[in-house]
Image 1 (tube, rainbow, N blue to C red):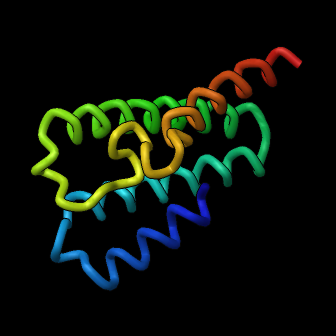
Image 2 (cartoon, rainbow, N blue to C red):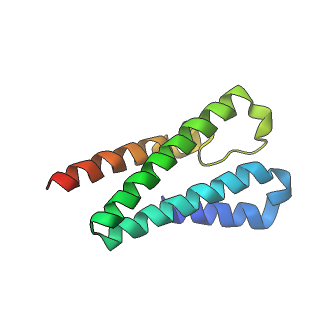
Length: 111
């Protein structure tokens, strides 16, 4: 998901940022969060686990907020973001990923 989000965002920002700056900026934020979560999970340790848990919660909040915003006011998003429609364009993976991550992080703490 990290590679896909970064690649898509880099292409969109470099080729059509002026068309939908809010959508592409939010896609960029999602990409950065995905990369950071991946980094913390690879790094390991209790501090990294806590940081990843906070990032997953922030990611879920972003998906829910932007997902709702794109449904309530679709004209604010002429182009879709990773979080649009709760991740509709990504088979809802953006809403499932942080939930799965938080569950995994909580379970791995007990191990």
